[in-house]
Amino acid sequence: MPHSERGMVVGLFGGSFNPPHQGHALVAEIAIKRLRLDQLWWMVTPGNPLKSRNQLAPLAERLAESERVAADPRIKVTAFEQTLGTSYTANTLARVKARNPHVHFIWIMGADSLQTFHKWQKWQEIARTFPIAVIDRPGATLSFLSSKMARTFGFARVDEDDARVLWKKRAPAWTFIHGPRSGLSSTAIRNGSSHSDAE
Image 1 (cartoon, rainbow, N blue to C red):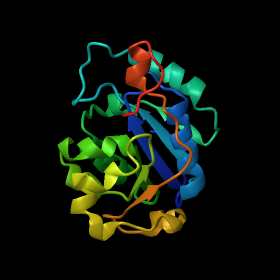
Image 2 (tube, rainbow, N blue to C red):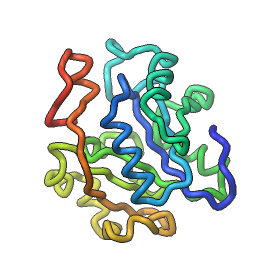
Image 3 (tube, rainbow, N blue to C red):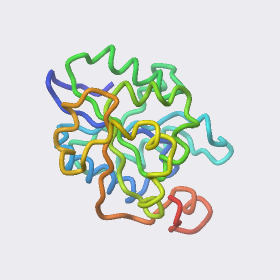
């Protein structure tokens, strides 16, 4: 895992990044600014249990491309899940929490992932591990409220104006952050296009 100091506020931004693109970088930059992060760990996963591995580029390639895209020095590109041997986010976050008890973590996800979040293994446990920041993505601005996560944890929603102090909230706590949006999509890029309404 990347090095962090006691008391730091660290964002966790995980994904297959297949491939990484400027849309991912925009989400990371918005998170750093609005959440007042000291670091953002750009976690390149070995694979996504909900997605096919048929078109998955080698991990080393996705890491190198992520390093190129993530220019901000506060972004730490890492693939520590491979070392941990964890395949599911809930297990990864539990290990992160155990190893870094004095760091304030926030799980960061694009709003387009919110519609399927309830399909993740132990998704409610994830929501109870760290506060969550959902960053706006094209096509998801209005639909996020209908997601199972938003309905289940509606009581724990934090006003966007208080995003800078989300790290102080005890999970479950989440906020939706509006901002500039990029229509770039990893799926569309793999399919020979560059934009998608869904990602």
